[in-house]
Length: 351
Image (cartoon, rainbow, N blue to C red; front, side):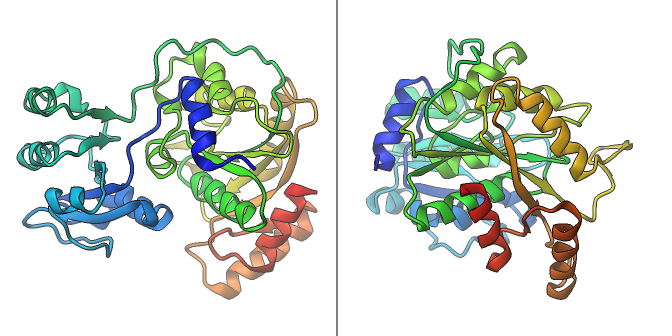
């Protein structure tokens, strides 16, 4: 079985960067938990790679990790400060600059998934040059991404796809990866968005790749692998989304999934942010994903459905999943709730 470090090295040689870990999570002066979703995602899914958190005066949220100064975090083994804030507009707060400079002076690289670039802030660039630290903007694709080839690659792949954006594709892929590893299966989580990349330590920011190179980016994200190795690939957007379908289709063609899992929020009826468009049905997503995905993998199949039932109580969630299993003839589960239904989903994927 290939080790995680070996697999990461393989990917880095293919052109996908890795990130310095462990992390110190920076919460800034955040007062709304929703604006710290990157920090919470890292604490939930990569807690073993987070040494602590750093909050400024006025911050009212916490991940529950130990509070640490940059110097203390570096002493504890941290290699990077991660901006765990995802605020409106994705901006770097002026009040943060001094703290980020302090972190570089303590020996930490700075990692950000914000729209605003670290390398666009002169004070940070000067500090990085002076200290020899790196400013790592996650939403910067690696150079020289090739166009897709459609060449069949060795190994096995799963892609999470969705009826819409922001409804559980990342969490589903992460939960499946955890379940595969627990079963002793050689598997990697392949990240395609900012928080996923920070959790995995590397990946491909698909929403920042030029459209002509989307498929090629997905190919280098998931290179040839041993025949029994699985890549669990985080999906992006939806092939039905009028705004983001280009990213979704390029990822589908380039990842060449053997199996896909449809992710769906049963309480949503319209496309998020484009409310004049109705949400596609699960059946429509299955049908179109097979038709489009078979272009690069004729053997593609649906492994089941992942429902985001976070807004439902336990009884309502169980009743809905049972009804959908009966209606679709496929395993249906909420990966966060787990249980027998999730085990059945994993089993069908591996069948």
